[in-house]
Image 1 (cartoon, rainbow, N blue to C red):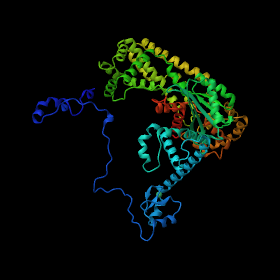
Image 2: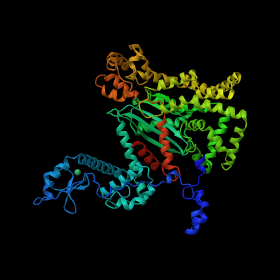
Image 3: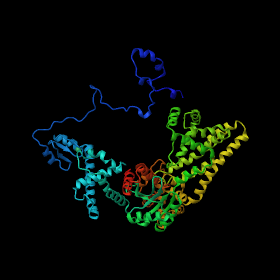
Image 4: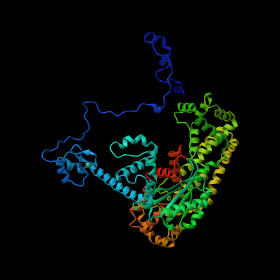
Length: 639
Ligand SMILES: [Zn+2]
């Protein structure tokens, strides 16, 4: 408290009282007397790294080697061909891979060519040349089909423009900013073109990215993650998930559509089919899973899609469902309080500043798209409840919201209920928050999903409520009847949330839960403790993509699997383990490749939407779909 009432440095109280004295010595301007504004912590001065003072030994730099007499740089060029060397404009030997001049003394050249820097630079240069040839080849094809303006320009200029445009899209830089970079980008290289002309190249870049995804998933099993949003605009996204030959899990956006109005379930199914089967050319038996939010339109879409893709396992998003558990809590006073509490900070910078100086914490805020972000605000409110009361004593802060908050705190019965509701939310929702976060990643989560959800059933039964217990004890002040009433009240708050959770996971998500239960057989560190018998392997028939022939092969290989997986630590990365044991367990490893594609959440789609909203928040209407798609695809897919 004390620190915040102190004026900023340079104009303390003592200086003001000393004023007549100091004025006698030297006249001071009014500026010296007025209080300066409190600088933000971001206003601190940046530390600039400087060179060591003269006399301090520098780290060893590049030694100056004098060029030998009697030998010409061009002789070295003949002696070391294919090493990216050339003669530069000042007739020196120049390495294009490292972008530096090299002495043409023989030993220097040899040392240079052996260095890691040179090897890496050479690799990079070769990749660049290959990629440029690729672009040039693709442009030829594109020209034949489209005859775009500018097709007569030299290849080098067009390829350069495509590369600049691609880099801008990948970094999320608006194309309209190209004029700021033009001078710099044209300095040592080729001419760019106007922003509208650069935009003309978008369909080509978008087509190339689609072709890249298409080539990456050709012939592989895939799963899809799809969802619609209305946050920025009506949009539908389809992400494909696949495993590379090196056992790396990849997720790529293959379709982002902007829509005039929201789609029906059948329209969504039609889009999935046109994207996956027609454009990407994936055979329908290789589409083995679909993860989506459980909105009714997506469920209708899945019913239609299952007719075409008979091997598909349908997974309603676990994270979305767990998120809604919190929304089902019945905490009327806390809802009213938290709304005014958050509102107070969103609308008043003064309140934010007061809160920061009072607690040293950033002001509470939450995002509507991020799951459980409201919970985090409440958990912080619980810890800083005393500071919140102090803040509300301040007459200066956001008046309307503060009045609402004070009205709750001044009513003892309401205040008591508020505290119980807050404690119940923090205690009981914590495991749900953790599970949501665990399950929304992009990794190999199929092996852990069942246990994560099961832990929630256990948490509900165990009633471990430390904050509720402490709060009820304190409020009841030794009155056991009163304490029981407060505990019952906490129960009433939680009941609808728990009922929602059980309803969803015991019924709607039951088939998916069974699939994740069976998927645990692929956990090398857990399989031995499960003591599976050949008949247990039949549980894997919940996966529509495992025909009985596959299950029989897995049964045959089971003893071998159990023996190889003996004493596997739970700390290992299961994907790496399967990659390393593929040659010993070919059938199980092949089946495991399918399991890596099954995810418990559609959070990937959510992440695409957040890229969309970050990149196109303000100029959505003016951006055409090819621009939005190319930007979001290149940003997401190049992660
Ligand atoms: Zn080099």
